[in-house]
Image (cartoon, rainbow, N blue to C red; front, side):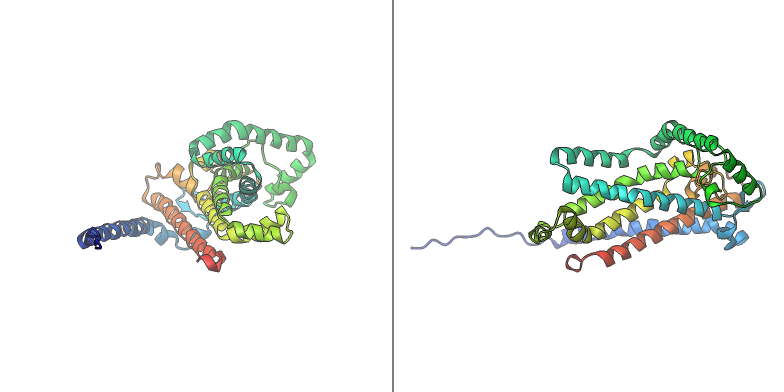
Length: 331
């Protein structure tokens, strides 16, 4: 005699609950889209007076003077791009070196503390970076600038003459006008430190995700450690590494407080790598609260709109680059 097992009845799918969940998810997604569109609308609406007054010349004019009501963003755009891309150029090799060391070379007892310290750099507030730059880095840069002054008196005189005539030279580009410490170089250094953990953390994680089969296949062919990293790990992880680099670039483009504290905030092109200049974000932070006249306020908001679109373009470009670099098997 056989006994028949009775399985417990499964509850029927709750179509009502699925519908509620779908509605909530769609609603939250629409909120994100609405915030994006509302930001574009408000920034665009308040930018109309400046765009009507200056047109496309707003992007090419170099004078930013609220007293004479002349507003041109060319020097601010240049300051933003120079500080961001030079900081990125310096930080990427450092970030990749630290990621490869942590993921491939360091023992576990050392890799975990180093990873934690690198990630901790991203959690430090911008104002702390700015204060640290003012009290720790600025005196060092001033001493170095003073050394350049005292050791090259003839070059100092020559550069002063050239700058008075509105000219410059390669040697003068590296000679400061005065040993003040603040300026473009200090902003680049502090930005380099601030964006380094973004690339390093992402690169470390994607390197660790590379399948062990790829490593073992290279080792089986007699490859060295560096050849395995170069031929099997970095090509597989390049999409993720590129994503981390673009993420760091986005942070650099929009960084405000730390840069505003150290860059000098002079809305003009820097005549040398030590010279004072300004970025779009630093100018917004410093002048928005004092912009009482309509044209001045509209010009500041136009800077915000421009920075907004630059961030969107950078992120969209990142998606295209990552899609192109991602291996076909994991798309």
